[in-house]
Amino acid sequence: MKEYEIKLTDIQRILQGEIPMHFFIEVIFRTAAIYLILMVSMRLMGKRMSSQLSRNEMAAVASLAAAVGVPLMNPDRGLLPAVVIAAVIITLQILIAKIAANNIKFESLTQDKYNMLIKDGVMNPKAMVLTRITKDRVLSQLRSEGISHLGMVKRLYFEASGTFSCLKNTIPVPGLSTIPNWDHEMSEKIHSQTAIRVCESCGAYKQDTSADKCQNCEKNAWVYAVSNLKDIKG
Image 1 (spheres, rainbow, N blue to C red):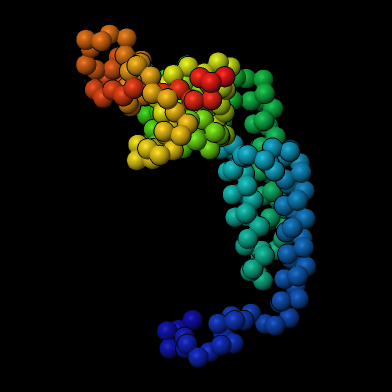
Image 2: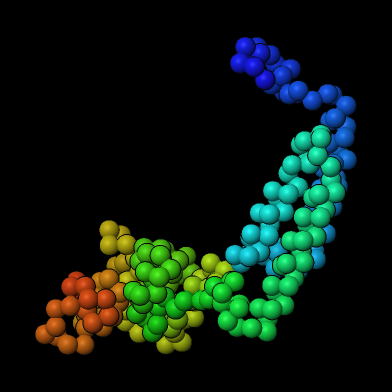
């Protein structure tokens, strides 16, 4: 389209474009066909496609979306190429899933693996750097699960799918508070301060009172661990 042909007052061009009106009837049938292609493709690729997606599953969905989008809106493109592309994607996805089920190394290569972010109430700085997860993100996740200090956590895993899995301590121990420093009112309501000192950065216990740096993360900032009031009363 030439520049001089573009006019802001041309409402018909803005709404309809340059396609004939009868194409809108064809769009109805194209949309129904594309919808069926997607439904069949997702069904053949398994139940996981309707839950949390892994990396290769997300790539499959994005590829399907790119394949079916063109014939949906372009009148000079047929539906058969989209069917062929969907068949190739489904075949590859099923093949990758079968190989990954029998080969742990291949599964880790294609779908990544989990990382342990917290072990026995102490954050793992190396794993957090590797996964690019910040301390604030970890504490936010713990707060969303009702955890007010790290002593309540036995393990926190960052799964290959990008989700968090938390295993709680059956008997909580004192640990670093997950409540923001500025929310003193909330902390005073649920916490009791202990005499145990922990690293403000990772929650590791200060084993050597004469040491300045944390042996776990090498930071030099210490705070007092806290316990929940309800645990003390219980």
